[in-house]
Each structure stands twice: as structure tokens, then as C-alpha cells.
Amino acid sequence: MIKTVIFDWAGTTVDYGSLAPVIAFKKAFDRAGINVLDSEIRIDMGIAKWDHIGKILAMPRISEQWKEVYNRLPSEDDRENVYGLFQESLINHLKISTELKPGVLDAFQYLTAHHIRVATTTGYTLEMMNIVRDSAAKLGYLPELVVTSEDVAGQGRPSPAMIKTILSQFSINELQSVMKIGDTVVDIQEGKNAGVITVGIIEGSSLMGLSEAEYDRLTEDEKILKRREVRTTFENEGADLIINNMSELPDVIETLNASEEVTNG
Image (cartoon, rainbow, N blue to C red):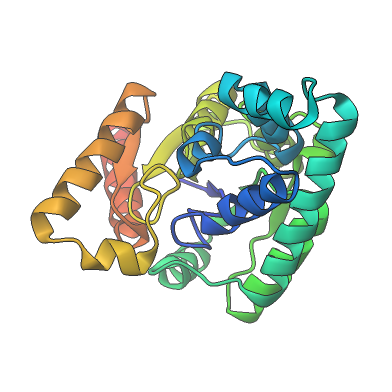
């Protein structure tokens, strides 16, 4: 029986398309005089933001740009500077804009009604999460436990440390009673490393990388193609289950629970 669901945040339950961090990364690098592409940012989406900055700076194209602008390769001080710019930009954005993705509130209410506990992990810092959590709570979405990498000595995804903290605090021993839902490759890796059931969400995901308006403008054939591309990525990562959107979650849980009852019966 599913007793606990662990959600990601941006791209999963809030921020359709996980656009806020992409915008913040671009602004931070722009202010440093460096052009970074959306596709380059999304490669490592979901990991701790300090680690993410380091990954971007290590990309050959970005390193070459940095060398052209500053006549040297980026240093740790440069990483600190870009990280500071990123934090400033993202926090300013989060203060004015936090929206739940379609179906999230209904799914949360279903989980609450069925006494399924809700927790979250994230690539956001504690400061960022405090803003998002408070804004989401005003919209009716209030997970019982919010864990960041700062709660586990900086061990961000794909480390299972954040999930293990939740398992410990909830006194969970049966890993197959826990479901981790996310919109990135590292969400699935995090869940698999923790030994829990992993679920990839397609629409509004960072992997798809489209805003809600952009997705809605697609033809039905284009939507099918986009969903198929994201589904294939999740399948290649070994996701246990894949849903198109949050409205499908209750049925997925009901099916899992029913199959377990049959097996145990």
C-alpha cells in the first residue's frame, strides 16, 4: 500500500515547465557577460543549485566564453559570484510568482483524504523553499515535510540522503510503500538510489521545457510527440511509472494498491 508520496517542487507541483530557475540562471550568467542556452541549463536540472552552477561553468562552451571575456578560466570566486547573482534573481522571482500546476491541489486533497503522507525534496535552497512553501500553502498545498540539501550536509540529488531523512522522520521501513514523483532525470535517480517507487511526470516538466501556454498551443500530434520524447527519457532512466499529469496520480495509486491486495490475497 502506498503510504507516503514524496514530491519534487519546480516542474512537478509548481512552476509549469520549471521556468523560474532557467530564467534566474540566464540572468545570472548574462550579468557575468556569459551567454548560456536553455538546453545547457536543463541538462542538470534538479541538482543542488551550487552544484548546478559548477556544472555549467565546467561546460567547454561556457569555459571558452569565460576565457574570451576574462582571459582566464572561471575560478571558485567566479562560481561564488554567479551563484550569488542566481540566488538574488531567483528569490526575487519566487517572491512574486508561485503557481501550482494543474491537478496538484486535487491530487493533494486525494492523498490527504486517504491518509497518505506528503513530503518533498528539492534542488532549491532552504531560503528559496521557505518562500515557495509559504506561497504554495496559501494556495492550499502544504506538504508535511520539506527537505533541502542543507538538511543533509549538502548531499543533493542524485544522492538518496534527502529521501532517507524523510524515511527516518516518518519511521518508514517498507520502501515499496513510498512513491517519489519528479520531472527530471535526477528525480528518478534519487528515488532509485533510495529504493522507493519512482514516478516521472511529463506535462509541465523540465524535461519538456515548455510553458503551459506553449504546450497548449501545440497541435495534438505535436503534444503526442513531445510526451513521447519525455516518456522515453524517463523509461531510459528506469522510472517505475510515468504519468502525463497530476490528475492521473489517484488512479495510479489505486491500481498499485489493488494489485498488492490481489497479490497478498
